[in-house]
Amino acid sequence: GGVAGMQAAIDGPELVAGVVLMDVSLRMLHETKQSPLARPLVTQFQRLLRTTNAGKYFFDNLATPETLRSVLQQAYSDPDAVTDELIECLLSPGMTPGAVAVFLDFISYSTGPLPEDQLPQLKCPVRIIWGEEDPWELVEWGRDFQKFDCVEDFISLPGVGHCPMDEAPELVNPLLQEFVLKHQERSTELEQRVAADAAVAP
Image (cartoon, rainbow, N blue to C red; front, side):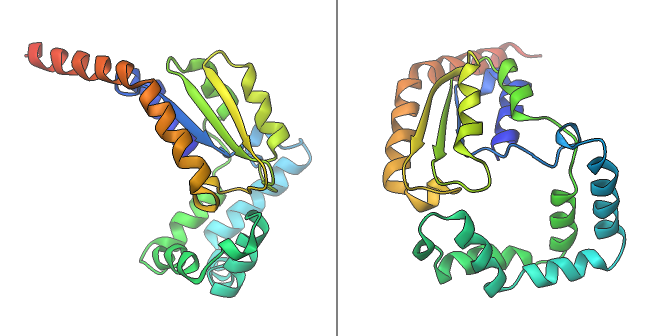
């Protein structure tokens, strides 16, 4: 979501007043982050998943309540936050037609933009929120993004894992509200500019 949001801000800067990133994917399977020895092996494994029944077998074994719960309890700092309701919400879309193909495309996507390539292109302010206990996207790696001019602040949340918005909404929601209110004037200006451009368009 963070990579997609930044790309939207890059492609349509007149439409985006600010961006908030939360434990954004660092895309460690990207081809530029793989060693020369690992790259062909990763590519072959991804091709195997996408072109044979191995992919569906892998998905079917992952898309079970027990396996998903185990995976999420690694990502969430508080295992009790992985509720039956959360499991159901995440599994339901996986039971729809085409879900397997979407999942395999997602885990096989090793090209495209990286956050460190997008941030220098952004013309709007960015707030970064990161769970300090994220085991997948380490907070130490996320802090490197503070060097980019567009990043207003980097806020780490103690005791929170990979999904701050779900694990600690009582911490995240005020941070989102504060950021939106802070840049409300910029948002209004962009809306007025878009409306003016639309009015003069042939």
